[in-house]
Amino acid sequence: MIITLILLISGIAFFKLIFPKLGSISILPLALAISSAELYFINVILYLNTSLNYKCIALISLFILISQSLLVFYYQRTNFKHIYESIKTYIIRKPLIVLGAILFYVLLSYWTPYGWDAITLHDFRSNLILNRYSFNQMLELSSQDKFNPTYYLSYPPFIAFVHAFYYSLSSNPTNFHLFSHICVSLLVYLLLRSVIDNKFSSILGIIYFFNPIMIEHTGIGYTNLPYTYFYISLIYFIFISKYKLDIKNIFIIGLLTSVLKLIRYTDPFNIIPILIITFLVKDKIYSKTLKLLILLLFTHVLTLHWSNIIKMTNGSFLGENILSLIIKLYQNKSVIVAANLIFVQKLITHWLLILFTIPLAIYNLIINRKKLILLLSLNVLLVLFVTYIGTMLAIIQLPGRPEITDSLNRIFMFILPITWVILGSQLTFKNKNI
Image 1 (cartoon, rainbow, N blue to C red):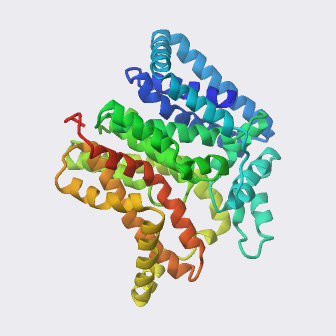
Image 2 (cartoon, rainbow, N blue to C red):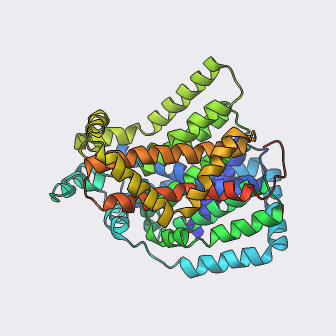
Image 3 (tube, rainbow, N blue to C red):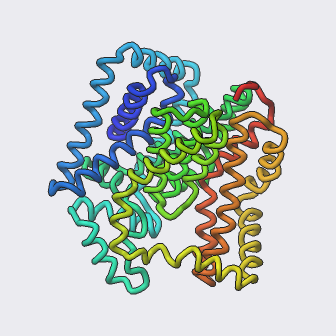
């Protein structure tokens, strides 16, 4: 728990350094995302460019994070005093919620990662990192598996580095996933509070907090919960930044977007919020285009190290070329029927909440002019559209594979908080300027 608290404090310090005027409660749920992103990049730079053992890398990372917090705390003592007072006031006003969250944390923080890929890929790679295996050596280990010869490079190592950091400092990485879920729940509450009454938003936030799917993933230690956390953090930051694309905002948006890509490299969803904010921002066309290009370039630069690493696999884990898959899709119309059946069946049996959100999202696009609701509605519809296309391409590439339907179960996870906010927003609107 101490390691997670250090990450939270470091994230708050980072935000207060760049955005001193942002409210303390507003930045609290974003803190873990920012500090873990910073931690990852420090780790990767040292891991790829030095011969230091990982224990030294972890201690250097810890030193940088603590030093950053102390320096910002020293130069912005007034802001941190305000944060302390705000948190103390919240604890006094909401003692049952705080005690419930602490009890929930204590009960679940002793879990260790479980689940096939969570252990055999992400958690095992963290042990390879602790033992200073290079990515070339990881690829050599994978090559012994005739079914998946690039297994240990099939996902970027964000989760593996976070787990390695926790393990090297004798801590449980499940803490990171548990706090990620707590932060997502708080972000859901804050988004709801901006559009409906505080009492209703608190109730809906608590209900979301006890969502069994999300609670299960706090112990699995897989990519889906962190992906959900970073995605909803990106949406929330776009909202609190008032849909502006100045240098500071571009930096944070680009950082969060790049981490999404470093959690699930082949998923195209991270680009959706960037496209939407470019559409919503009030600016001239050439200015919007320039800012979009800067964002994309910044994201590309931050993920370039992983692009270079996967060149060792000759792109084999990425599967077939997209163009060849589209040609196959055009030639095989039965795939469209199969995709329709799988897609609708999953929405009805597992994600009925998302199914109910679709007509509301379409309605919001036609009638609603509130930017937050437009942002959320566009996200849901574009994610569903991209997932539908992806399902068809996956059926062509992996015919008869049950993993496709299992993957859909997990993919839909990250839009669940967005659908919850959209549904909750229909209760009543509080603020006309959102």
